[in-house]
Amino acid sequence: MDKNHFDLAVVGAGVLGLAHALAAARKGLRVAVIDRDPRANGASVRNFGLVVVSGQQDGESLALARRTRALWEELAQEAGIAIVQRGMLVAARRAEAMAVLEAFAQTETGGGCTLHTSADALARWPMLGGDIVGAMWSPHELRMESRTAIPRFAAFLAERHGVTFLHAAVTAVEPGRVVTTRGAVDAARVVVTPGDDLQTLFPGRLASFDITRCKLQMLRVVDPALAALPCAGITDLSLLRYGGFADLPEADALAARLRAEQPAHLDNGAHLITVRSEDGSLVLGDSHHYGPSPDPFGSSQVDDLILSEYAALFGHAPAQVTERWIGTYASAPDRALLIDSPHASIRLVVVTSGTGASTGLAIGEQVVAELCG
Image (cartoon, rainbow, N blue to C red):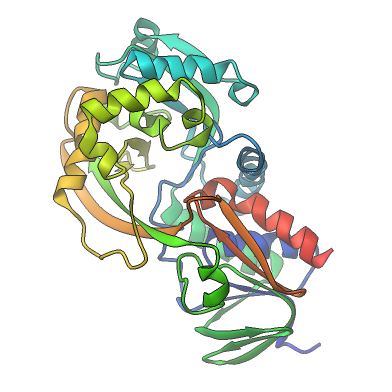
């Protein structure tokens, strides 16, 4: 057997690339994953590690998230990836937000979610402050520590499935061949998962889809009062960022009130997601600024917007901010996912909605099934 010939070569070792490698390896195919870096350091590790199901836009995004959640459950058990938290608490700080949650709970996509009065929510989740009118509990979400989960995912593919990892920059992809800075790799089929690198491979094709880049800011904080936070938490601002909520007619009134009361948050795409890590620290975020070449600098004003929402929800500021970072990902105004076919044996796959952790495993399964049979 030619050691340099593979059934499938995957360009990109983020969560989406690993998802394709997993799906192919489970079919018994010989797989290579090629990335310029020896470990993932992009969007796949600069996020919440949160698989969000409730709130995904009805249709393809929701179906992908539901399937991805099931695949993460399997993978976590097989690969020894810790699931740190389960479920998501949506705390409503305004009557208009509660109206959105009530409408959502009546839809098919809200199945399994339960509504709670303010008093009930404060009794069940006493770490909340008093500034809420009600809440919704979703049992569907999973949270992994992405900084450790993604490297463990890659190690599992190498150890259990014999996937080959090659550290090289890819300069060209041709039918049957991937050209790298360390030589060519022969492969019957190729999947390219470029993340938000829109210039190196197939730049003309990517440009035709009006894809840009989104910059986000996140923080890690210490707050002893929330060291046992049992689930992910989001607030009113987040409801406008998830299509499953934002597409409801009731969201219009919420958007109008937020525009009047928190215009700076909306202008910066700032909202609050709070998740807990195994060491008890919390990861907070995030914000959204769009452009073809986002600057690499974090803004203290944006961090303060995120922290102000945290204080409004929990009644106090965190004791300490221990880390701050930015991330970038591909974004498109009219699609959550791009699957393009530059050639019958090549697929170009880009998640354009910042939902790689939530939908990526199912995307990989779907693309490999279609490409490899």
